[in-house]
Image (tube, rainbow, N blue to C red; front, side):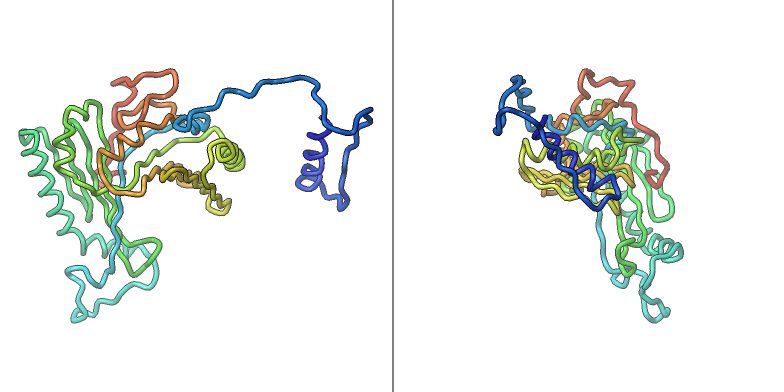
Length: 299
């Protein structure tokens, strides 16, 4: 108790009070050194793969994601003879312009994937639904939904961005070979979107600090953006509370190998998903893992 109060009271005064001085509690004891009043065994060590299970998320969608960026001036359709100029600011008009410049490329990509999706599992036309809309679109089958959207890169106004997503549905494992053949290595992270997290940003960082102390790894947090990143053994977990996303990356690109790697981790999700390990105390259920419908832009 003495050791605890000497540490905590000083920290409380610094964080919570306006007093300029310090408070250092003293204990009147017959001994001057630490002594044991009661022995409490340490809790069993949490397996590394389950270290994040205590961070509770009310998840609502999960998907693989890959992004591609490039210079707008390199796109087909950009020409100086039409007095096209490279944008210097992010704007709605530049966003729409990038979508128009990329619309033909997106249409061709979706058509190629449509043909592959029909050929790989010998699907009929009615089994593969394709939709296009404003430089984006999606492809729907019983095993997956693929969506693509384009626009101006919000981090660099002179660049375009292409975002690709793949959401796997119940029973996708029966089509593993076909999915691998269709998509190759287009994705570099698995994303979990959540409605809410039980912890505040400060509480989240404190939990990650505890995990870092017990499991090792590196932790970086930024309260300006509400982002906290925990790295361990080549795996990066990025919690973004502003966007309500958890991103898991493995330092490589792929498709199903990323899903297989993510399923080795026990997370604190509340909803079962065909792309994640089952929540603690639950098993995967067709009702709980029904995919959320999106529009042609994947939203």
